[in-house]
Length: 264
Image 1 (spheres, rainbow, N blue to C red):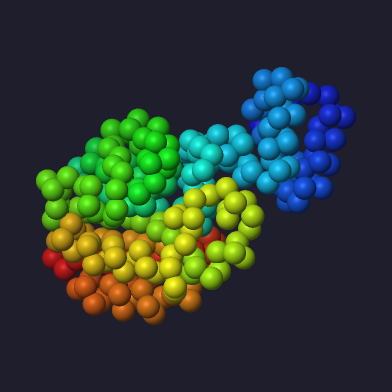
Image 2: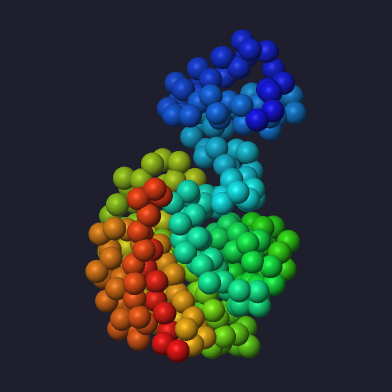
């Protein structure tokens, strides 16, 4: 990381302010904020936003995800490290020319990484939130992808029905009653539609699973991030719509992914 452009004493004070505000990685955040600021005055403004509870990624305007710098605008869901596992699972067996859909795309982080990893993929992304769509376009269009506003598969072009090789979704899976217990950074600064998954957290998963068979190519895969306690329900949901379900788990990322494959 580049050296901060301000005196050590200022850096120490900055770290102390961040630590007092509850920032666990105060030193790293101090350096990132200092590098992002073009003047001591701007640094003061950035630090004030962070101390007030704004997510670091919203303050900086970007998040690192699978080695890529992803634009993250205020009011948009911040991609989590655990979702890197979902992305890596989706990238397996991905070939140039494959059709990929990043559903509930948020910032478009997952789709951008997949398109960056495998050149020549046909990338489409969808989100119901116009703010997220605007942000996703900044990340996805640089790889030749297209982003749509709408409810799940409804806005996708009919020309890719039955041709999608990978349909990946980091859909909301927090049960409604648990949203109030999420960290303030999430529940106060990210859209509720990106957090609240309904009664048991899997409302969107059920709807997407029901739609997926009409869009997947033979052998195509639907991949969705879920909570550990939701595995049995997710497997049953996928099986009911004719998808062969498997579960992938990463202890490193504390992540669980359910994969549904359309029979060939």
